[in-house]
Length: 65
Ligand SMILES: [Zn+2]
Image (tube, rainbow, N blue to C red; front, side, top):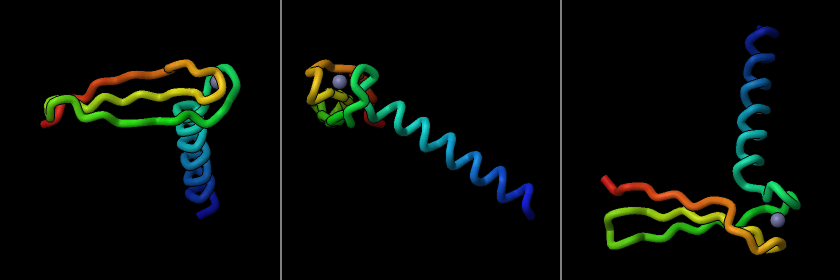
C-alpha cells in the first residue's frame, strides 16, 4: 500500500507542475489570464496573456466537433 500511495502522490505532483507550467508566465511567473473565444462556431481560440508583461504566451485553435 505504501508503494501505491507513493505513486499517487508522485502523479499528483507532476500534474500540478504541468498545470503551473501552463498557467504561469514564463518570464515573471504571474498567473496568466486565459480566455476562450468561439470563432464562428468552427473553432475555439485559446489565448493566454500575462497581465504583467502584457505578452501573449499562447494561442491555440481547437476545431469544434
Ligand atoms: Zn509575465
